[in-house]
Image 1: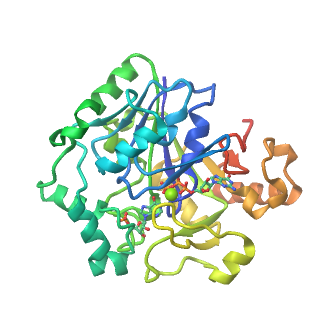
Image 2: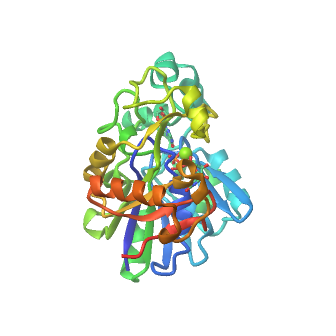
Amino acid sequence: MSVTVVVGGFFGDEGKGKIVSHLVNDKSHSYKIVARGGVGPNAGHTVVIGDKVYKLRMVPSGFAGKNIEKLLIGPGVLIDPQVLLNEIQLTKTMGKIFCDYQCGIINKAHIEKDKTNSHLKDQVGTSGSGTGPANEDRVRRILPLACDIPELQNILIDVPLELHKALLDNKSVLVEGTQATHLSLWHGTYPHVTSKDVTASAICSDVGIGPTNVTDVVLVFKAFVTRVGSLRAEKMENQLTDEETIKRGWVEYGTVTGRLRRAAPFSIPLAKRSIFLNGATKLALTKLDIIFPEDSGKKEFEDLSSQAKGWVIEKEKQLGMKFSWIGTGPADSEIITRKK
Ligand code: GTP
Ligand code: IMP
Ligand code: MG
């Protein structure tokens, strides 16, 4: 029995979706339950299984795990009912997926405000998904909850109690975070942040798991740093120009917003701070293949080019921790699992 929490180490879009979709099929853990924390449908996780690409905003990225019995969305997560119901159809997860009675509900007015309020839209550069305005209403204690919505009645459950029962039954649980450490309302680059804390402690609280139950915190980094959102947010250390980003092939567009993500090289200071803010016990690295294209799709550390190996080892020395998983392509199978 174990509880693993997966969170992002930079500004989101590190590839948590891919790491989670890999972990749920990893035989050494045999997870039975996936629980999603985080803000809500402002997230955009990409899960690539075989030749199928899923862009998910609400359904947990671990939906395709072969032994997964239940997919749970914790009470700290905001729900956009239409987005959730569409994704349940797309992923064929009806009967397996449940959300908590106390998940807050995003309505059209929240989305409208997120898209038109000049502070949110221009200063913060929000995703426009309505999460910030809905969390404002939650704090004012006027936000409708999932239990008030007829369309959701057959997928409601007491998520913290389900997780408690699963742990009593010795079932392993994977808890998915969204957004990332430096977008945290408490710890991030305020005011250019999301509307909640999103570090590992907050993600556990979102789903109702106490800190003493956590076995591992897996912190996901990308081989370079990207961030979307307001151009007014301060520049990242060594931020590249758009031209240089394109030249290096580090181009990414937001899954939810479609905006070009700003890019910078891997940042040791940001990574070190994330490690202690989350109490990370394991690290994952994605997109090594983007900075070393010749290493695309490799599955053994020993097979990496000497440049890629050197790059990884240097980062590990500086961080004082190893990367337990290294992504070498978008598909869930394109990954190196490091031997201890
Ligand atoms: P948020 O919850 O929105 O922060 O997203 P996320 O962390 O799940 O990441 P997202 O899916 O938005 O972005 C990661 C992108 O990188 C996706 O397009 C993935 O398919 C891709 N990706 C993930 N890992 C790798 C990798 O190792 N190599 C390559 N080439 N692509 C990867
Ligand atoms: P909000 O969360 O939509 O209010 O947006 C606040 C800031 O967080 C903006 O800069 C968004 O682009 C960013 N953000 C929110 N969720 C994600 C995510 O999942 N990935 C990357 N950036 C995000
Ligand atoms: Mg994303």
